[in-house]
Image (tube, rainbow, N blue to C red; front, side):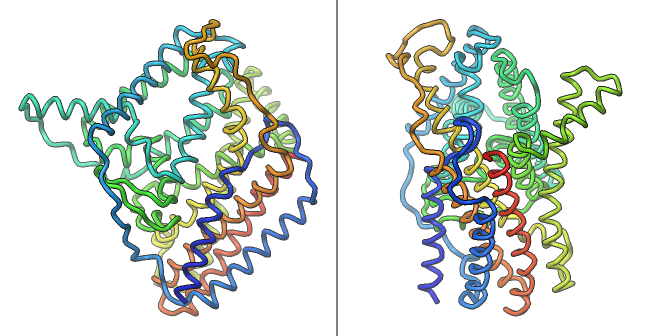
Amino acid sequence: MQRISGLTLAGLALGAVLPATAAAHGISGRASLPVPAWLFAWAAAIVLVVSFVALSALWSTPRLQALQPKRLGTVPGVLTGLCGLIGMALFVLLIYAGYAGVGGEDAQTKNFDPTFIYIIFWVGVPITSAVTGDWFRAFSPWRAVARTARWLGRRAGAGRPGPLAYPEWLGRWPVVVGVFAFGWLELIYHNHDSPSLLASLALAYFVLMLVGMALFGAETWSDYGDPFGGYFNLFSRLGPLEARERVIYARRPFTGVIGMKAVPGTVALVLVVIGITTFDGASNGVVWNNLGPHITDFFKSLGASDDTADQLADSLGLLIAIGVVSGFFWLGVLGMRTVSRRFGLRDLSSQFAHTLVPIAFAYVLAHYFSLLIWQGQAIGYLASDPLGHGSNLIGTAHWHINYNFLGSTAIWYVQVLALVVGHVAGLTLAHDRALSIFRSGVEAVRSQYWMLAMMVCFTSLGLWLLSDVNT
């Protein structure tokens, strides 16, 4: 049984590595699909069912709930300080490019800020965090300022009042609100590529983070109040590495989410991440292209301008996408409660919230990775000319984007692989949690009929989004 457990986890770890060559929609145009989308959907459903049967027959006791990470070593303090300096330098460059660089229609391709924020930061950091751990904490400019202020205070012998107690009811809701707001900015707001707007928002965010850390403490606020920090940390829990107080630990892939504290807002955070990605895919597909204009016309009939009506329609679409995703999860939770009335809905949702994290990562990876490996190459020449004024600071201004890096057929297959592996990982985590909380193995397996149905719905939705966009 230990061998079976090890092989299953090894397979999940391999799945985490293989999608690293995946790609997403949009940049290269339509993908040439060698196999019909319906066949991929059926194949994915069969994989999930077979995985469920295998887990039910061969995984009869919980194996992941009490795993302890292994200590690897300590990070030197000077390295943490250097990372903070790099983070601050990039932040200063972002602000400078936002106000002094080119704007208007040329901003998207010639200014440093849109590419860095929407591709390198928003896509690249969470994807790499799932492999290397929560490295953003070391580079975070607001954390660097907080660390520096704390060090200077200690050197000066200045005391300070203790931080305020963080409200338990608030939980991760600041992260949820921040991630939703950024998703709305990226996908819906028409002027989202304006460098000066991005620089102003970055400055406001920086000040807000400093205020939050001053009130509640740097670590507490980073865990629960920093939207980007909380989002990146969520995916870093899937990886094999973890850093706590400058100590590096090793753990089995995907198991870091098991110990995630299910405070208020945890379930909503994962559902919002999946919903944002779902709407991004659906907004380029047939359904929304047919439905969206009618909703836009409705808002126009109420007196809204063209831009406002379009943004209101897309905002409604984003809320619908989050609602659909939430519906899948809560149907699964309601179904599990029919197996045993000993658990309330809130308790079950908290117990199984971590099982959605691999699914959220699979959606992000499958949907956005080609944007990172293709359009992300633009950061090479933008680093030499961050303002778009024709400079060549580090000799890379002549670089260009190679769109032949991956073929469209390979992209489609890896997208499917990412989705299937992510959902199998979620199913495995759910099965292990069910064994640990239900009274018997039979009861645990019965509860997972509902989780299997939920996983099939999520997998089918993800594959439909890919086929709907790419065909």
